[in-house]
Image 1 (cartoon, helix red, strand yellow):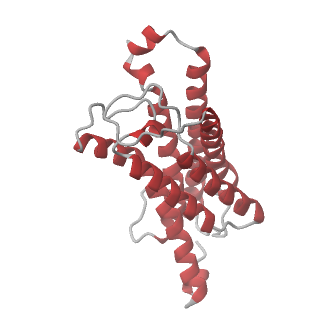
Image 2 (cartoon, one colour):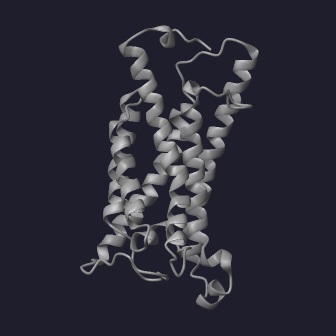
Length: 240
């Protein structure tokens, strides 16, 4: 690929590296969030390390990790600058939405396990802000996969580079559809209003929200990591 910008010394090159590292940090935070929450509650001997959703970890021993990670991601999105004003707008919205998800928690209903944090003055409208912000945030993650990540200033010059560029674009689309499908599955299971006894008798249905939130985060994070991989010292098989 064309690497003219990488051959420059000083500001432009450093800005490029910082730009790619920012993508990598966002991807790593998304990839590690679910694992960090589970490990924290498990190691601190929570009575129920698995919660009904990632949002329910707000009340667990993973409270600081949940809130802290989302706020850090919000700050990273706020400082992230895309290639045009539309990408900048989406980035700023993602930053705001990530913070809103952290600040306005989901309902305590359905929570099980050890309680680390309890919000005494919880308002009913908090949950509406939380769900709306989370849903829109995942939708914007998909926008990156479909609209922004396939576009690049790096022009593939050899047949091998062209092939790898096509593979990356395909994976970005897979991630976009994966995010959308995961969110739709969460919504469909909620809308169907499945009998409580049926849900409790099925491990999959009980933790369906947690499962599909985790798959959404996986697709989101790996797409950002792949986009940042051009500056990695190791090659990414099949893609780079």
